[in-house]
Image (cartoon, rainbow, N blue to C red; front, side, top):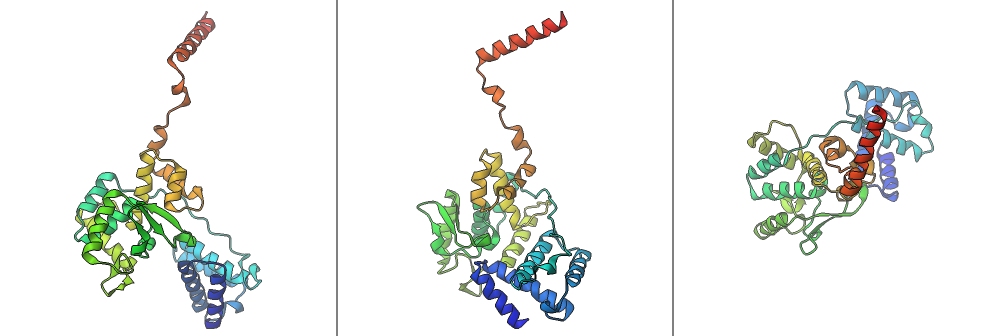
Amino acid sequence: MGILKDKMIKDMIVHGYAEETIRSYTTCMTLLTRHFQKSPLELEPIDIYHFFLYLRLDKRADSSLIIFYSAFLLFYTLRDRKEMMQLVPFPKRKRSVVAVFSKTEITSILSHCRTDWEKVIFTLLYSSGIRIGEVVKLKTSHIDFDRKSILIESGKGGHERYALLADKTAILLKQYMEIYNPKSYLFFSHKGKDIAASVRSIQASFQKIRKLANIEKYGTVHTLRHSFATHLMEDGYGLVYIQKLLGHADIKTTLVYLHVCPNFLLKVTSPLETISKIKMGMFENQIQYGFQFHLS
């Protein structure tokens, strides 16, 4: 689908889609083409139905199905053939409780980092809550030590935002930059300073560290982000504040952390507790009188 692929990429660029989304959607269309060995314009709604049946039988994750659906819907909508999706319902993501590391486990993970590079990158990921895809795109110019902030230039959905730069992280970053002298990308590849470190290499390093720390609970680099948000909530910060730091477009996405730390709800003080002792005493007397009245 060479010509169609080029046209789709141009359309997505015009509509302002992020690079990662463009890459994901074109990959989905390529897989659809290979599956049927024909152009997606030659397919019928029943073909899209059978393709999603194939994906379900292949045990694809709900998140993956949503990406496929969104890619196909965009492709056919741009060609006035939205009816191609009429036989397939929009995949619903099953709500699940995300994994979270305790503060003790976070301490153990960071203390078992084997190199300065690992220490800095995983400290930064936890202390700021940014995504692994965002950290590999960080450039030296994105770090503002004076304002204690990190500019996320191209976050999920192409939105910009600022993330936290903790004091301890800033100290590590300054030491790291003095030693490794990054030129463009903050975390560069061993292939050269003009090449960003790969997501795969960071994930692989994290799993080795997790095992060294003897943490049996399974988690990925993304679990550091979940832990950041959960620990903020446990420390009393509000959902809206956490939403902005995480870069969630919809607060419904942030609400998942209420399920992760139900104890947070138990720490909420009832408005009844704010009633003064004098008023409370009168209230108690009225209750006692009421009980006596009904018992008499």
